[in-house]
Image (tube, rainbow, N blue to C red; front, side, top):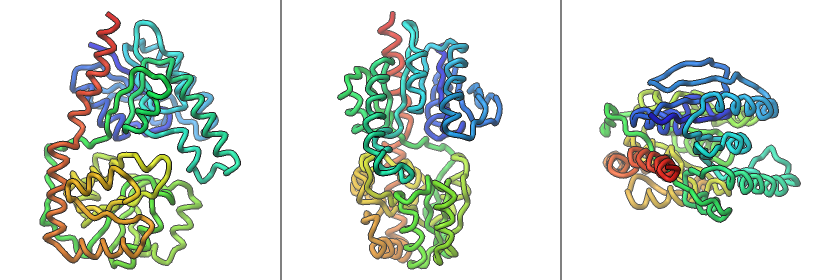
Length: 373
């Protein structure tokens, strides 16, 4: 039985991609799986996955200095065949964990250097130098581990341009839930639009709040706000009275508590270096839940899948009038909305689910193991 260690000091222990998709898939396929986290919630074993907690460091600098060092120490103690880490903060750790008899992979969920150009809290004068510093770090460390796992073609091409020889794309498709069948005929009265995910300006939170209020549709917001200041500024809007804000809800509770009680899903991400070529997982989760979707024209994947499947309506995420028009169209045309929901659900069930990606991940692992024999 091959021993695999997944490591993150930034993500939640039950992160959708890390825990539910990758770790659970590996357990089901016969691997011994460890997950190292740093959230202060203690050690536990869940569904056979051995979760090791490094303890919580609230300050990001302290987390970088101490949690990463602890992760390296614990990782070495486990002495695994495969190390699979998920944070750019751990690139140095990954290099130190690499030996001649193991494999070490960085799972690049996002284009990390590009984030330096779009983070609001980074002063403009520093964003470009930090971009080049982050890129230089990626190039140096990614060449000194076994390979890269990532989520999109664009990020994969970037790492190949660095000279990384082993790069694999594991797309962030949803896991099919065998007992989760959408009720396409559900009556939600009054109608509700939902958005689940990080709540930041560039994800269109303000536009969603205004558009839903104008369309006369309740907005169900789920997820963490980027900052308390941003949350306060949204709460100060007169349209906030139309918002039902739930905060963070675990992945395995979303269908029952949010999706089954919503009329439509919103994916209104705006154009940004780290967004344009991304695969927003929420679009696929909405589709799996049978929701018609109002989707962003600024995101290539959203445009492509919405056009191909007919699962919703594409809008300019900055055009509030068009968003209002799309919401009203879905709410007032029940049969069209049902048809969109069915088309999206069938597409996920047939093609856009994680089962195929789990096989790619294991094949990627095994290819390196075979090459060492």
